[in-house]
Amino acid sequence: MMKLAKVEYCNLCFFSKNGLFLLYVVDNKIFLMEIENLNINKIYVTSYKIDYIEFSNDNVHFLVLMKDKGCIVVYSFYDDDVIYKIEDYFQKYTHSFFINKYNYICVLKYEQWYLKYISIYDGNKEEMCLLNIKDAKLKKKNYCLNDDETIFACITENNKKNKICLISFPNCIFINTIQCINYEPNCIFFSKTDNIIIHSEKAKLLHMYKIDGELLYVYSYLSQLPCKQI
Image 1 (cartoon, rainbow, N blue to C red):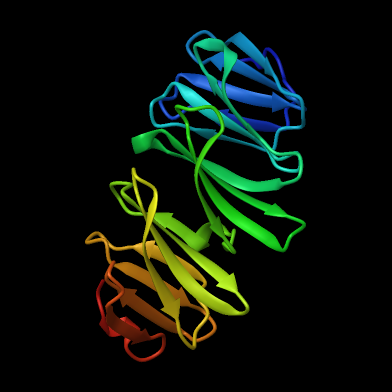
Image 2 (cartoon, one colour; image 1 turned 90 degrees about the vertical axis):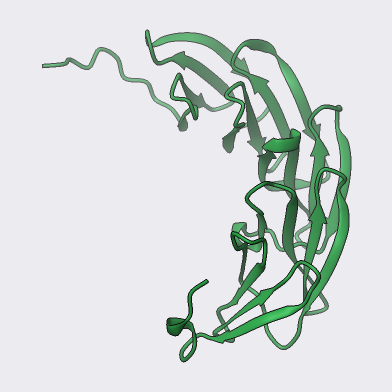
């Protein structure tokens, strides 16, 4: 029978995507353990309490989020130094993630709750903000990427008017804005053919648009949806 040799207290615990490393967090310290020998390889120390860790698809880098301090740090499994840092003392960050294809970092942030942004940073250049999307809704189902990470879509709201903003990568330019007329979107995602599907829980509707804004279908939640395939 296997015996439990040692118990470690931690706040958070993550396995790397390739399964080679285990990261566990104790307050403001990250302990990097190699799975093969269960030895602690590195200890990263941050200035603030750690809220979340996100891994890059390159199996080399990981992102550390400190929400209330408006701070993000990128580390490498194979380096002791900070690779990249984003920090703003006047903002709070709710979530962040890698856009792996172009080494971009997406940050969801707010100032005093009523000023909300999604910001795209170039991970190759220190704190190089490529784009700010104002009035963005910050819940996870309110933004998405298509499969090949060339188009980013998010829901924005201003004066109770909802819109879908479409951004092209890697040049980070607005390619279109779709107005949500007479319904409030709750969820957005892409189909395999890069059409945009928008779900409205309150109106019990599903809308499908082309990238150019052409409305393809409107499905009723109760009558039409069970008979359709997307």
